[in-house]
Amino acid sequence: MAMGIRKSKLVFAAAACAAAVTLASCASLQHSWDQGNVHGVANLINGGQSAKLAAMSSTPFLVDGEIVALKADVAGFWDGIIKAGYKVEKPELNAANPVTADSYKLFADTMEVKSFFAQYVKKDTRILELKTSAGKSVLLIIKDALFSKKIIQGFKGPY
Image (cartoon, rainbow, N blue to C red; front, side, top):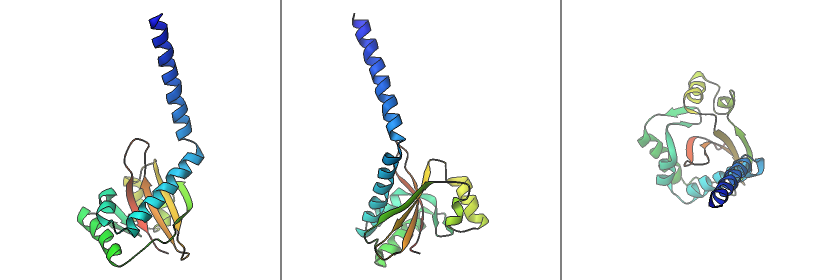
């Protein structure tokens, strides 16, 4: 009898895991994650949290169409925009898409940026476009896997 109960608990646990995986792939859940990422990065920028932004950023890092190779330079980028007073006022998720073969063109249609995407930007990465109250857009390259930490791989804007 105890063996049957353990087996049914195991079957229930497997079914619960399958349901969780199915739910995780839902478009509405992905939209919520994307929206959360936009607001999370905007809140860090607006709050002057350059050190946290630098810690979340990968190297190499893409800024507009330029590749930043050193961690210290990525930290300098975030410090610079914070010290310049850059704010992301009332950010709204305008678009969110998985990376495709042509996503690099959103940053710059160059071989350097194309190579960056081919080498460093993997399939579980998303391009998020946020619109600010000033009507400007900012693009983020975000890798946000279910069981790993969020990583910012690129930033473009405002444009």
